[in-house]
Image 1 (cartoon, one colour):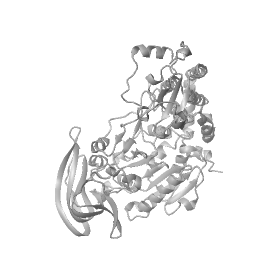
Image 2 (tube, helix red, strand yellow):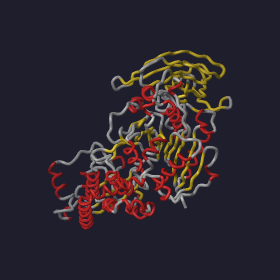
Image 3 (tube, one colour):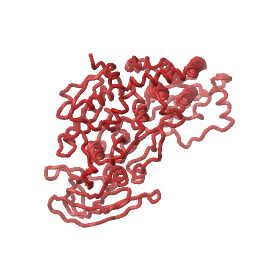
Image 4 (tube, one colour):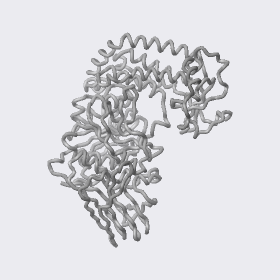
Length: 608
């Protein structure tokens, strides 16, 4: 039995055209209309290498995840050219090229060229085109061969939740409909989309069509939106076998969804309970992969399993496709996460966190394997240029405390220790409002599960986010000299011992240190909470800068705020220590109800 594993893709919009090396390497080519169809035009003498993030085939992953028996390449093409079939492996850290075959073609009419790949352990397979004259490439595919018993039927439902992101969601639905549901591809009869509208601003005319449904929902955040999407997917006809959770503020590549579907149909039996984790690439730096799988560390902080990498570099693409070592607490973020129906039926629905941490909690709760490969991705608006203290200092920390208390899944993770460290660091950098958000996170956690069950997440967000720094254009700080490229200096060293001791003993001048000895010169720091001890040490004023949008906010030294917040946090920590076991019992018992359909139907008002 044959399966089209990967189709050759071209840049789908103007933004991606600037990052053509995600698709192929060599000189940039234009897209033209030839014979009434879109084609890539390759002029005489050009050489294009399709060993790229989106068009190369990660052979190691397809063979690891499925029982692939054979592979061939088919190209629909016209012109005079040389076609080379290639493979790459990291030996030891540099990609080494192998050429399996090379043949010259002269095609005056559009036709199909086929190349069989040999059985090989090369990690990455691709092809190269050298134009001997004008060449038009209309498309192509990598086609795999499988035994019939290794292929299964799959019905995939995308569950996406949106709230006031009309341009993104309408564009994504249009792309899915045109490139997948209305295509002549196998997926067309097996793909469904459930759009959950938390903002209730969309109409059925905006969204609905064959295989696409719209569900107005109360604004219960991502947790409520995804819970509704899961629920509707499990109750729909035909019988859905897998649910793909996907963010709204992303740019999608329909081919990523198609490849996910194909992978599901050929997964090895021992991987049938695994989740497929799509990567998040930065919408503003489209070549940069931010994360594909994350983990909770023992110190209680979240960490992406791989460093940020430029996916225009072949060595990074291949490194990205190396299988990760064992991780104790992995999870897949819900910008693109596909899970089997059976795992939802087994594990239940998300916790009612509103936003942040629901995907982390669900991932560690599932105790499953997470699969990833290059080409399965979305472009997200990113985090660096829209850091939100409320999200990080309140939502994330509060919800991680609940994850810790409600199960034994992360017993070895020091979540309260990470909160202590965050609180201390925010005070040192004069970010008193963020320190207050941490206090509120601990206060609300201490209210117990009844608070979580009845909390109005939208109201809390509106009330608490006033503590986010009010960023202003840097032009309003024209009297302060700064360089954007030096806001974060990776070469900047730490403190000397003679500087570090008084800095720590005085808590950056907040204790045992006269204000008259503080420096008048404004310290320039990153607004994201980057560790910059030299810059924050003993300053009366700091300018926190967002270098991405050229804004900043002034922070002023205050012993009074320091004392008030320190006393408050110490009292909360004392209460936490005395009630820790009681809260664990309460949250773990409440969780049994929180993840049920009965709870979510009541919470969302669906039975009214």
